[in-house]
Structures are given as C-alpha cells and as structure tokens.
Length: 358
Image 1 (spheres, rainbow, N blue to C red):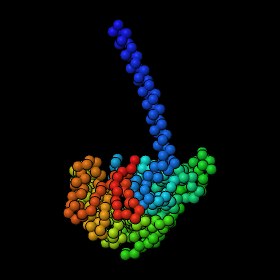
Image 2: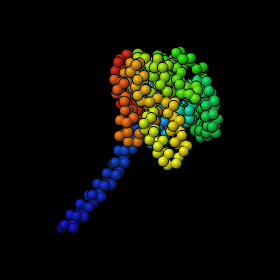
Image 3: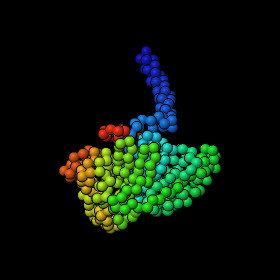
C-alpha cells in the first residue's frame, strides 16, 4: 500500500512540475508580450508626467564600469525627446526606461571626447529603425560636429544598405539613415546661445572650460517653468555658475581626487606608468564633488545630481568618500546618479521628484 501511495505522490509531483513549467512559460511569455506592447504603444512613455523629465541613459565616464554606461542624458518635455551626449552602451538604456528611440527629435553633443560620442552610431540606428524616419537625426553641437557626424555616417554606410535591402524601403526608409550635423558657433563667456526651441522647450548652450579640449559647452534646459543644467565636462566654471542660477536641477560631472589618487598609487605599484600618468593628468580638467556643490549652493540650485562619475564606484562604501566635504558647502539635495536615474519636474511647480525607471 505504501508503495502505491509513494508512486501516486511521485506521479502528482511529476504532473505538477510539468504543469508548472507549461503554465509558467506561458505566464512569462505573456508578461514579455505585455512589456513589448507597453514600450511600442507608448504606454510606458505616457507615464512621464507633463513637465520636465530627465533620465540618465548613461552616468559613467571613460573608466570601464559594469554599472554605468557612457555619459548620456535623456530629456523628455511633453511629447518631445532630446538626448545630450551618447556614450558607449547608453542607447540600450532607452527602451528599458520607456523612452522610445523613435521619438528622439535631436541629439546634442557637449564636446567631442570619445566617451561622449562613441555610442552615437548605435543611437542614430535605433532612432531610424524604431521610428521609420525619412530624414536623418539632427545632431547639434559646436563647430566640429560636422566631422563627427560625417565619420559615423561613413562608418555605417554599408550597414545602412544592409538594413534597407533586408527590410525594404517602406519599413526602413533610406532617407532616415544616420545623422545631419547642425553646428553652432561657440558662445562668448557670459553669453548663451539658444540652439533649440520648439513647443515650449528651450535649449541654451554656454561655454565651459575643459581645456585643452575645445570647443566644449554645457546646456541649460527650460520648459514650462522648470529648468535643468547639464554641465558636460569642465573644471569649476564661473560661466557655468552664471547659467545655473535658480535652476531646479544641476547635473554636474564630478571627479574625486582622493579616489583617483588611489588609482595613481596602485598604478605606480603595478608598474603601469601610462595609467599612473593618465590618472595624474585628468585631475586638471574636471570638477571635484565639493567644487560642484559650491556652484550649486551659490546658484541656489534645488537638487545636485552627480554624473560622469570618476572613478568607478563598484561598492557602496566608496560613495561617502566620493561625497566627502559636500554637505559642508551645500544644503540642497544630493544624488550620485546611476543609469536609469529619473528626475521629474512637474510643470509649473517647485517639486523635484527622484526615482529610477525600469
């Protein structure tokens, strides 16, 4: 009798396992389909409330970082999407946060360091394929952007042909491939240049100091009474501080000299002379966390968000060291950005909401 009971229980367990796998697979596939619908129908995008929304599609730097893609900021204003910089891997963060690449109206470049442009080819391809656009993506930046865009267009020329040949020109319109450069002359110190204005969204470029890298700009974003400033790469800059006056959110690059010094020392001990020298050199054209905090305090910024994090922060314990001294000089909110960090600034309000998408 016990043998029959045991065999019966074994049979039930086998049946339960089969049913669990079958039903479980169906459930997972159904969830997957729902997510595809949400992303492609605009349901996920609709979750962005009216106002100014900012998502970090990349919060890292040239240092290899499994947690952070290269620098990239997605700005959502109403139905408009613009992208500022396009670092390696950043385009792949758009869909998971509910930002359809096909909605991108324009890409803005702060400067032409490789880590700010090396994801541009993939971004342009996603925008073209996902949106079936019939004209290239506008790529806006200071003079010199023409060479960058021409280079990517040339590198992708064969791929453009493959896509059209495979899917057909109705699905992948040939005219939408690549980018089209829209250069602007560098604004003088103290002067801003409005480089984009559409349906209430205004983007103003201003000069920053990233010497010997020139040209280099930051961008101020204004929409429905809300504002944000993206620094790009720079040392502490009085010009940037001027344009940051009263903004709701300052997204500022930051390098911790204390942590970089550890890399320099380790490189010396390892006999890696080139890395030791590079670690020393990068100190003179970036802003420390404390310096960025001083700018935020003087400008009356509500929220300071660090991005383009140098060096890599692989463990949480390093973050207090990165922020050492910041609370002594700045009384506002402080965030160390991660990929998919989300800042929501509801229209005609003073509220700053922080979260994470995806």
